[in-house]
Image (cartoon, rainbow, N blue to C red):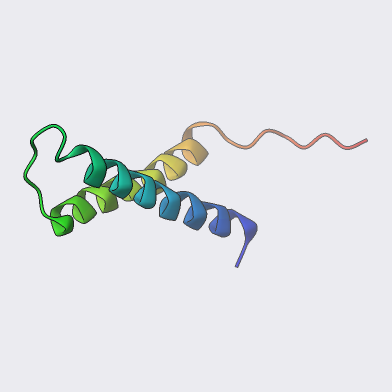
Length: 69
């Protein structure tokens, strides 16, 4: 597996974890009555956006040329 895919997977997993922990912590504080499954689905959608963002970033801003010494 290429380093690029490993980085994408790592970003996606961490985004899911961060979104899940944030939502499960804050939801009761703001009065949102959501189950863990609903919060996991929301977190999964957040993680999916990472994949979309990374794809768009590659299409909009091509990689900078490498400068050799």
